[in-house]
Length: 180
Image (spheres, rainbow, N blue to C red):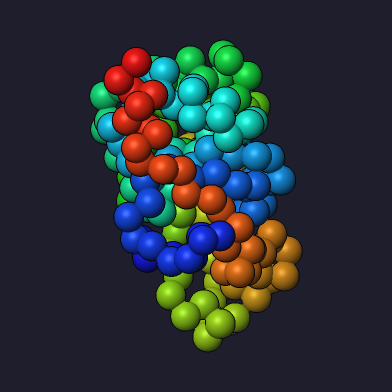
């Protein structure tokens, strides 16, 4: 994803750090953002220590892989170590992610962050959003609805300019840690 960082724009940053600016339970926490899927647990912990991170964010810049073999175990271990852990994934993967992370789904410091993309949402104030059930009176007690305008008025908003303080971590440093 081509985006702004504290030192300029890039589309090749794999790991970066900064304060969490999105309005999740980790809001304001120093965070290690991971936009790649090949790091070992020990490497993640070392990078988090170097970044003085309280939180770790998997799937930054839309890179989350729902069927990654080692990530569920890495995330469990990071939670046991006291980190807040976010996984940012697209709505299309929700059922797979919920199944893969069912044993930690309701842990306080685990943040499943389901992303729903609405391009040009400024044109959609009258759009109604509904959280529905799979069938009538099946798995939920009912349905929840609101207009996009109400959603935008009550939801936490993050302007694109707030992301510009994230600091890329050098790739050569990552590989030094991994080869220890």
